[in-house]
Image 1 (tube, one colour):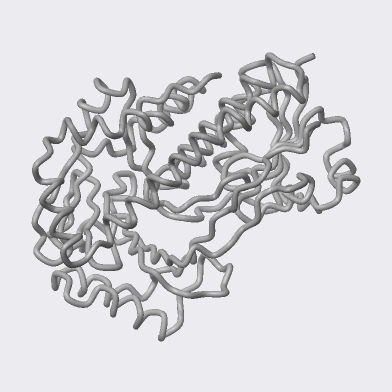
Image 2 (cartoon, rainbow, N blue to C red):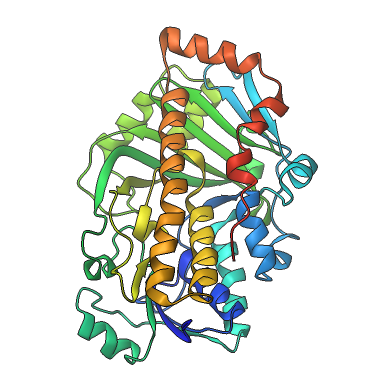
Length: 387
């Protein structure tokens, strides 16, 4: 029999989307979040057509469309010479080719749109300030009421619900650091494109920049290699870590290096990923989003995969016996996640290339028309989730 109730641990993008997707099938969802309030954590997000299509189905897209940016294109640019290497059109092109728009938005904007939809839905209940010792099943049942047919672990890369899944994934440091900051558009250097997503490329580093329309600001992420034992995703970074950041961008365009030197408020984000492992316990516990498969952001698909997970899980548990649905979900989603991990790893290699490899990269990309590059993304952006 399909399930009637679910307890979702975590009120991030994965958890909120899961609640809405389950409610769409008449399944009651109670969300449990340890934070007392959902605050503006994080920075910008890119929402590709495979995810915006789902948000539209769930009734969330209308709240985003008036305030988000649909970039004219995604551009790859040399970090030293500022020469355009390649570009993929977005805007109207994305809507026509992939059937849904490509947008950039602040994470808090998406979270608020999801939260408003959850609050308005009578089948969804949000419990804030409710930390749960998810490593103990009895504690989970006691905290959630013990009457949920399904427990959904949507509690991120440091998931505690993983402890309820034998042979589940485990987090490990990827060897990469992201420095994140937002700067007002009025004070942003002129080398930043006001209408597009731009990835500036250089040896062993790259810088992703795009406007956050609703904040009249730019979202900036500087990605470098590094070593860390910190789990803190909001730290200012040490003097040595800042010096390492600037060293990685030595030789870049002066406007970019000057922008980095001025960012005293940039946050130091060690990038952790989840190893390959089981996502469910064969009975009534499932992991989704970063709890199941935290990956590197170099394909800009972290939020999109959380949204896809939530939507497809709901469709499967609403139409099949639970154990069968969980097994099918894992088998269906794992190959796509594995392929995206490979794409992210390839992007990192290509973005950080140096010497002859960089020259070959630039030549090959410059010879391909934008429509050809877009075709390489059809399997990502054109994906239509089953729900």
